[in-house]
Length: 76
Image 1 (cartoon, rainbow, N blue to C red):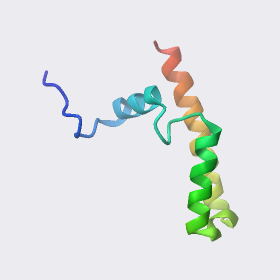
Image 2: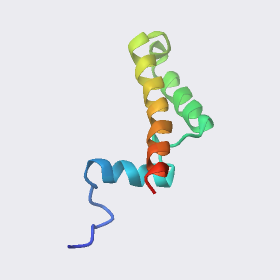
Image 3: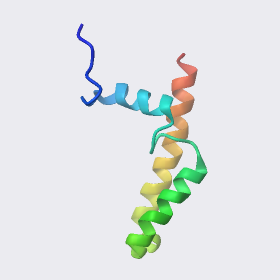
Image 4: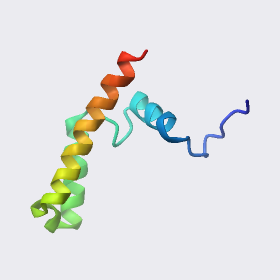
């Protein structure tokens, strides 16, 4: 098996696991990181803050970051 080049994308769940382990955005469970990114988005697109679909997507991603982290930890 060959070594993955750092610049190559990892496939599916392997990329997810690596992101969770590194606490990389959006896989972090750090609420401050989520809040800072939200402020950046709403600064550029203030209408997003009143779009229910955008809010559902935002919170669903935050929830899944926690779930993915918990699942990764339970499998180690």
